[in-house]
Image (cartoon, rainbow, N blue to C red):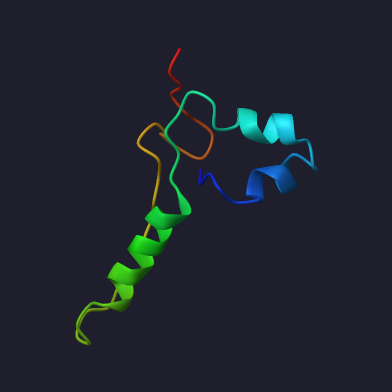
Length: 70
């Protein structure tokens, strides 16, 4: 889950309230977090091959399980 993008708004078919609710009670990843991972991958030495980067918010256990603050 990455806040600050239009993904949730598109996913919720334009319902801004539902899109905001996706991020309530969690500290989601921000676009800057994703950009930082990309910069990391691009700045490795030529002999380093990064095959995959998986980023999750610390509250996100899987694609369907999120632990929210009360």
